[in-house]
Image 1 (tube, rainbow, N blue to C red):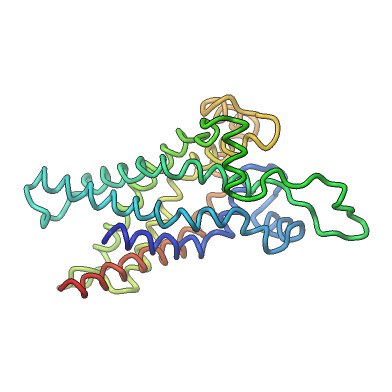
Image 2: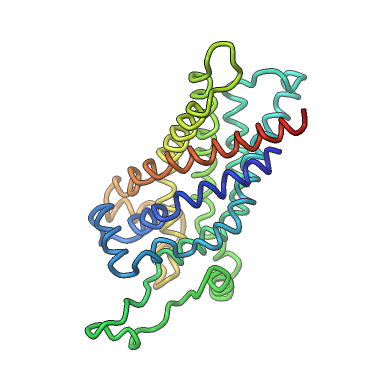
Length: 295
């Protein structure tokens, strides 16, 4: 049931957070934006509301699978660790047990998410034709290179080989391994803090607060590798700038300073709070509902 609950929670989360994810990607991959609000204004001016939802269809189709695998892998690993270490599933796991299970969840995600992340980043960062006006003859501009998520995946595989679909996967693995360890550990700790005496779980407000804080903390840890991942995955729309993970890190820091690794940090944390409130409250609600059916 953890797989099903994770799938439903993931879909609810992506519906809430996708527009700000697009803004985050633009800020991380393009130097021209001076602030979050500048990016939002420029994006809306050039592409209207639809610009915030570019590449959404693929994440919606795949997020249920990815989120299902994330939560399911976490619970499966945690159960196996408890069984091997303590000989019982009813023993309260240690913080190290939760951390290791979270790391495993993040590592497993990479094989599923890398191709979809490449398509999402390419679609979010490619420029669209402006609206037709008397002063902007958009018919003279070439059409967008990628016509949609599936066309993007097909084009990348054709032009860059299957390796192109896994660009930035090392940075993605570092990002998800650390962030999911933080994610599940912080959620567990905060839930424990907010659980009233005599109860085993917090109430709905406690779940909302725990989920929001866990998401914000996870993205605080993930942002540096998220910047590198986004730059590597976007590197293909034009002339290739980066030769690999190390070159991307060194060139980015050399050109823009260490603070480049924290581009989008505030936006990531602000977006993660409501998104993961929704993810965890949906996840816990589905588990509670299914427990009611099975007891």
